[in-house]
Length: 309
Ligand SMILES: [Zn+2]
Image 1 (cartoon, rainbow, N blue to C red):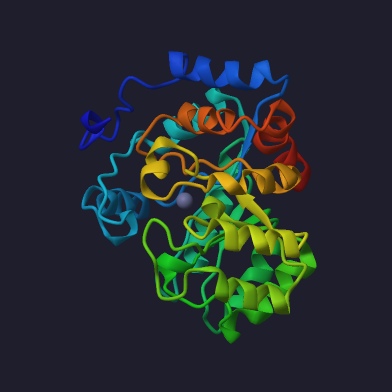
Image 2 (image 1 turned 180 degrees about the vertical axis):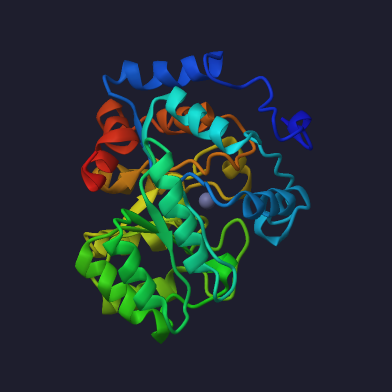
């Protein structure tokens, strides 16, 4: 895939609507008898922020763990959203996150507008430990936010920070899910790993946390939390792919636990920031051999139920 590196922004390479790849994705869910996919972990953000993220991946920044990371879907925003719809993704998110204080409100304002103009997008919001966080999280929920994103590694904050306590309480009360990147993969941060999240859950046991990347690489610790707290879910983002298998393989012995948690594993992909085609994530789930009922739950039904789509 390295031939996509540095490709002009208006070219998505050989992939696009009506392509063999889109047909392949549609065949995947059609075979399962599903009406499409629900993807809880896709990234859309203001253009200049996304370009910075791409530049970061190109420069092999710390988030990539120094690993070559050619972005497959480097296209204009409208094309990217159209591609998801062409894949048959019925609902997707706009995962966005601040790396410093004073930025979340601006991102949230952008996300309101993005959700309004983008069919299929679940209105997404974000947060950061800062004095007005409870206020703007409340405003976002009032405005109809369906899901939040928290990025513990990029934000470099402790999710158990007292400043966030009111916001977590509000989200737990409202039942709004939060996709949280809290595992130490692909690179650890000061507050990544299961400990800080366990402290948040001890205080807010009903908080609907969706652990991104299945908690990579601390998979089993985060499975412990999901088994302990019935509102904790896990998203599949990048996990089980060839790429992730080289970095941090999911332990084979934990597969039965994944089967048992069939109703709390959700499809996530990290589209568009992935170094392989979208279809590969689906095939990576299929080859786990957990069965069609598990795939139906993970790739569509769990997300559809959680978000009422
Ligand atoms: Zn992501």
